[in-house]
Length: 156
Image (cartoon, rainbow, N blue to C red; front, side, top):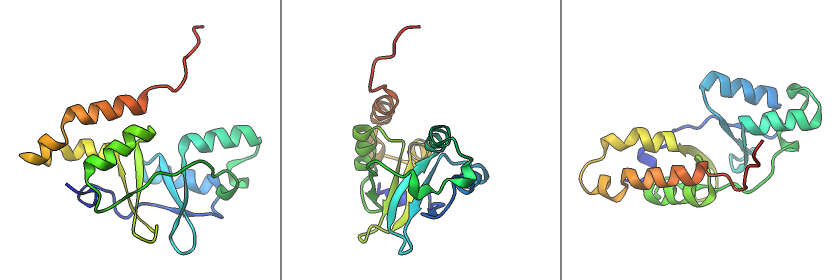
């Protein structure tokens, strides 16, 4: 099964000039925790999560309406293609410990997003070889890797 069969299309997105307040409002309205940030040509500039918004607001001691997303974007963004096998997308999620992957075309333009939710909710539709190739064990394994902490938590 290919990513295009499960991905959310179109993905809600914002431009580099958007404020964190605007982005948070979109997240609330569309019940999502991530927004891809795109350039004018729809190529992917980065992503921002609800957690990123909270941390940036606290660190900068500014109102979300005063912070432009372009000033807080950072880090590597992992993507996939709509033609990728879902198993390959799941492997990326596992390896990079991310719950969502922006889906881009050959010119790196945003066309959608695939999430662990999409994969989990799509599992019952798969039959025969597809359900064997992408087993629930693989999904659980990926989710465990995503949820694992990269550092030890000190006891209180």
